[in-house]
Length: 407
Image 1 (cartoon, rainbow, N blue to C red):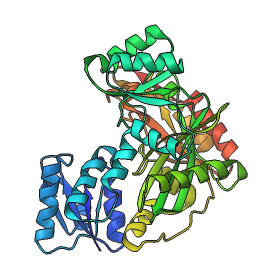
Image 2: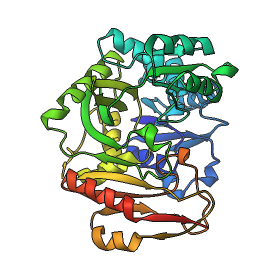
Image 3: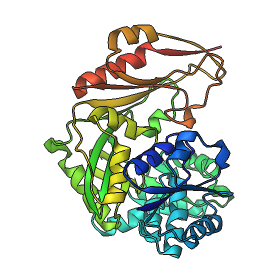
């Protein structure tokens, strides 16, 4: 099988998808933005060929590169992208070249939050009330009809990037300015849903779920991204077969069917609170922040390879063990500047070293990154334990103990 993979070198874990495709027996043709001589030798060894273009989101450049591969006599079975910003360009090139995979309609619905929610509400999926605001008055009218709090975000944003909360009229006016709505940018405006936030990730094959994993946020993302003092956690459960998860698993399958997601990774966010289970959003791509590495640590297998087998062979290879719950915790610097050192690391290593599967502690002198740069922007640890509740306690202790000092 011949598979074109978009942007194999950046970010760094992109090479894992290429490695897995090669291991699954696929001939991998990479298209990326870096010169071939800048690529690591192992990455080059996993690819049959590589084409450099100006930008992988520049559709005409991507199209020309794909056509060049086809015109060289290569039958292209799949064209794959795993980064949110690359999904639509890849879908449009698929459509133009007759390559199977996620359609432009599905890619659009998985990128455009107002359209996504409208389609799902019509099909009976419970979602927050939402609208597409093209003018400040659109946002004000929605607030008058729905009330506060409200969430304002880019229609095609990923995660909490560019997300604002408005709690009253004055707050909405500030958000209208800060979000760019006042300057003509379109935004999505949504009812704020009270409750616990989590996500469910799948490998889906021809619309059927082959693998699935559920992760909880502690605290919810918007709160975590607004306060430096919080050491946020994302914790994957190994209790997914318990009855309490049945509803979200069923919802996921309905959403996949409604949006016509065929063979793809998916990442679906949800809330559960006083109003019950609510769909938040879905992407036809893997999750970010290295979450597949968390699942690998929890389940004694290689999810990248499972994804590659789904694409190349139409089936998964190995069932997850569910032996561990696993999670990551972000460890944020106490202020802006340069990291001067750490405290509490040795104590945590002595107490929980057998449970820590990976850690990133930037060297002293490294410039700090702002809170909005994300969970992996500074220091972090990945931890696993057979018992979910025990793992939560370990992560809490790490967050209370390890300090990242700034000089």
